[in-house]
Amino acid sequence: MKREETQMFKKKEKKEWRSGVYLCTAKDSFDADLLESKLRSEDIPCERRYQGAGNFLEIALGANSTFPIDIYVPEETLEDAKNIIVAVPLEESDI
Picture 1 (cartoon, rainbow, N blue to C red):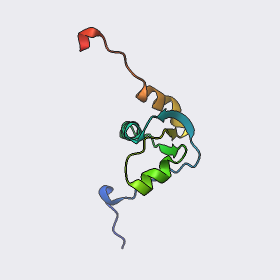
Picture 2: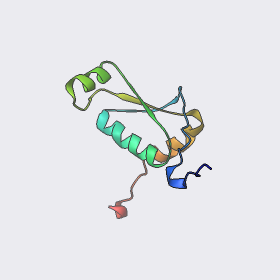
Picture 3: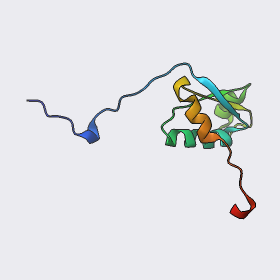
Picture 4: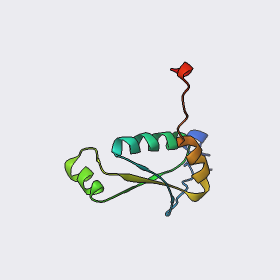
């Protein structure tokens, strides 16, 4: 008799995607970290694509890259992702 797995130990279904659509360009790895964190907190997977030698330098030097980084998301989540990262203007009374 097999024991049924409890909900806590069930393997989560992994949704894989290989080709995403362009969302935006982060100016450096710090901004890319912020964007990724926000998107993933909303269950939107994302992928970084480095421009130029940014990826190599980040690996070789172990430092944050100051090169632009493109952020890609699955096509079906593009509109949600755009709504999440949009800047909201503040009123003077909010400050």
